[in-house]
Structures are given as C-alpha cells and as structure tokens.
Image (cartoon, rainbow, N blue to C red; front, side, top):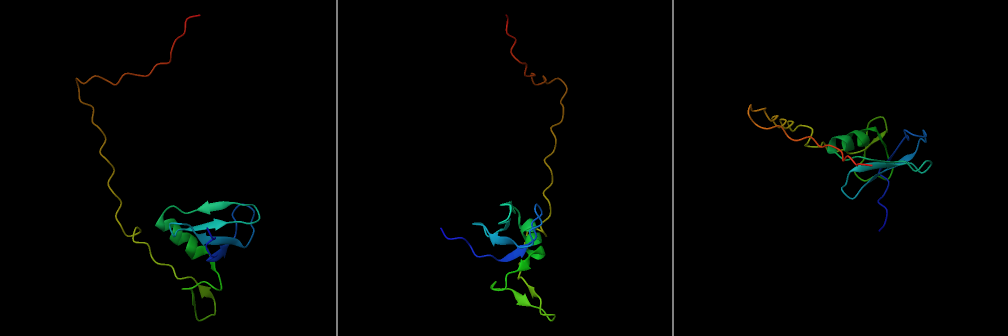
Length: 113
C-alpha cells in the first residue's frame, strides 16, 4: 500500500522539529508524523482534525489549497458538522430504591496455610 501524500507540515511537540509531516489516515483524518523522533499523533474526532489542519502549514503542491492576498497559502478545511451538533444529555443515574438488596462486594480469596 502506498503512503498518502503529505498535506502539510507542523512543528513536532516532542522534539521541536519544524517540518513534521501531516498526512491523512484511512478515515481521511489528519495525523502528524515526525521523521526525527518518529512521533505519530493521530486525530480521532472531526473537531481535532479541523484544529490540526488549521495549525499546519500547507504543502505547496496540496490540491484544494488557496493563496490569499498576501501570497500565503492556506489549506482548504471543510467545517465539521459535529461542531454544531448539540451534546447528548448524560444518562440518568440509577436511583436507590429502599428495600432493594445492595450488590454484593467482591472479596479476595482467603487461603488457609
């Protein structure tokens, strides 16, 4: 399987190498790989993916990147829809009902010598 192309560069948080590579994994989420210290940092959520893409320096040959008025290249980042989604309410805690037996505690085995 061929490696996916580099979509940008970032500074490595571990060794401060300025050109750690940013690529896409098989789920199209960004991850960072540092060739100096071999650190791999994966994003698992669309929000963190968008943050990493916003902080990276775009690769010059990145398709979809645009050049602004100052001549700096900025990557095209699609806004994730999960950011605007409301958070799910937590599950209600189970209430204590008087008269119900408590769960038995787990006790270690006692061995006779």
